[in-house]
Length: 185
Image 1: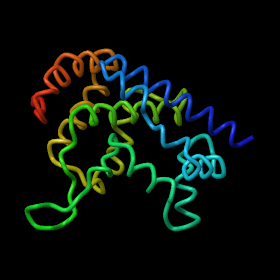
Image 2: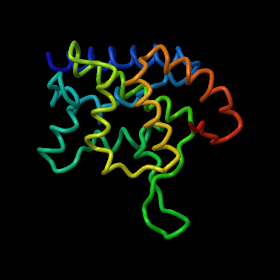
Image 3: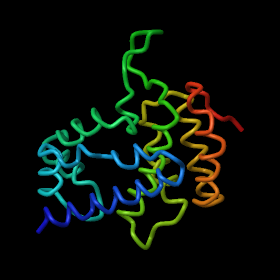
């Protein structure tokens, strides 16, 4: 029963991310989002620890002290900021590398979809920002990546999904083939 519920949660989440990615023109990312969740190392953990209102990886983490499913997932999905952690050329310490804009946008859409999936009718356009703010001091993220993500989350909270998706399509992704250029206020 839990395996079926977990699969339904994955499928619903992927559907929401796909719809969001399609709205901004990221068709390939919308289709390929989170395919690693179907691998045994991720799916079996998700089915075993399924709760319905929070990530099963947190339950695995509590039990084992780490989440093998999460370690597998973040290493294969470029829309996770943890994928982009590497040694800095400046000082040799671990640091967040600048994420290409298309992955920052997918991360943003992923956060909206996860919030909707877990919060259901309690979701508001402020939910992804509030969730981000709870943990942002622990995130190892490049400053440009942080600025763009926070800008999109604030814009969502203040102006809604239609506005921010239009902004992403017209202002953020319009120039994505020109490198890592981030739109500033």
